Image (cartoon, rainbow, N blue to C red; front, side, top):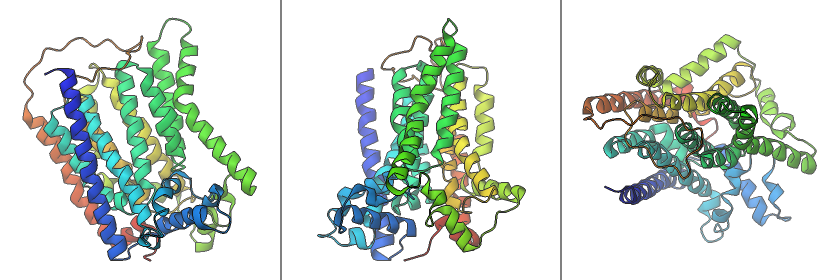
Length: 420
C-alpha cells in the first residue's frame, strides 16, 4: 500500500474521529449547561467578558481583561455574536462548550496522530485514542467550557511534533511546536511557561549533542530560540499589554480579582510543603494511576534502542507542567483543584503509544541533516499480546479516575467553582 493511500486513509480517519468527539462533547455540554444549568464559574466569567467585547457600552478587545489568558475567551467571539438569536449561547454559557469541544476533539486527533505517525496498527491507535477521549475527566472538561481543553490540545500538539523532531530533525516540527502550539498554550494557561522552558532546554541539549561539527553551540541556541522564543515573546507581550492598558503587568497576581487576592479573601493558608506535594501526587494517581508503570515499561523497552530519545519529550514537557502545579500548590500560590493535574491523562496516552514497537514512521517534510541514523529493521510478526496488555493497563485507570471525581472532597476540587 503506497504512502499516498495510507496518508489519505489516515486523514479520513482523523476527520471522522474529530467530528465524532466534537458531537459527543457538544451533546454532553448541552445536557449539562442548557438542560440542567450546571455551569462552571470560570466558564461563565469568560462568556461575560466576551459579551463585553461585543455588546458593552464601549466595545473593545481589551474588555476581555487580563486576569485570564485571552485565547479561551477570544475563540468564543464568533459564537457569542449569535447570542441575540439563541440566548442560551450566552445565558447558559454554551459558547464555552463550543470552544472546549472544538479543542478537546482536536486533542483526541493529536493522540491518534501519535500512533499514525509511528505506523502503529490502526486498531491499537484508535483504542488508545478512545481510552483518552472517553476518560471522564476529558469528557467533562471537553464539554464544560473551561481552559483545560485548549491547554490539553496545544500541549499534545507540541509534544507530538517534538517527538517527530527527535526522529527526523525536521525544522518544521520545531516551528509548529514552538512558534504556534506552545506560544498559544501560554496564552491559554500560565503553567505552559514551564513547558516552554523545558522544551527549549531539551531541544538545545539534543541539538548540541547530535550536531557535532562546529558551530554546534550556535545551532543549539538557534533551535532553542525557534522552539521557546515564541512562548517567551507571548509571556512578555501579554505582560506588556496588561501594563500598558491597566497598569498591571501580571494582574493574576497583583489585581484584587486575581488568584492571590482570592486566596487571601477565602482564608486559605499555604499547606506544609510536604503535604502539598503529597496532595499533588494523590491527584496525579487518581487521574493516571497507571502512568508510572507505563513509564517504567517504556523505558525498559526503548533504552539503548533506535529512537529511544522520543520518550524524553513527553516526560519532560508534560512532567514540567505537573511539577509546576505541584510546586505552586505546595507553596500556597494556587488552589487544590484536581483539574490542574489533567495533563497526566494525555501523558499516559502518549506513553501507551510509545510502549509498543514502531511501525513504518511517517515520511518527514524535510529530513534534517542531523537526524539520527536508524538501521533498517526486518519486518516481523508482532504479537497482539503486548498491544492488548498496554491498552488494558490504560483502561484500568479509568474506573479509579471516575471514583476519585465522585468523592466529596475531590468533587469540589474537580470543579473549582459553584453551580450556577
